[in-house]
Image (cartoon, rainbow, N blue to C red; front, side, top):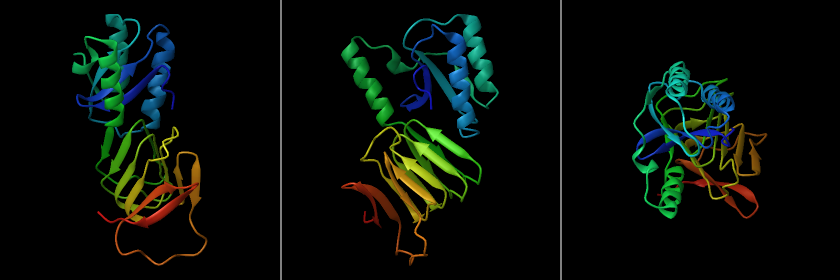
Length: 210
């Protein structure tokens, strides 16, 4: 996903549309729409605030952003996020790193074949991920159901990311740059949820012990 110009992230304020540089506003709108398309309907019904890191937006440009995200079922809260105004650069950088680390998207339904979810943060699915569906995110993936599609955690190189599922049967599993495919023969079902993590230079699956 293109996060150079803008990104949709979670924070303690909820969803925040972060615009890194508003100078080329047309390119910003295009990048924002691409992320909304990639996320399909997963942000539908959400309210998002707007954070502009560099440059300013006119009222007409705010209106354009509001109309764009409204087409994808989102509402723009024009009040600034509380953490967007801080007294020092060092504090601001700390807050921003924290918001990305804590960013989690909760999906309360099954992800069906043909649906693709890309997210900058962690993804929790309260349902199944069917064959032909795909989840790509920069953090962890937790599926409170069966994972039978494609899952790519730690997509920007986070090797300590994990993939957890009540039934872990992906057609393809990726963590950072490592890839694990489904075995040719069906293996016995484990007694309980499973978690996949990077051990050494490969992805290892094990029964989850809390």
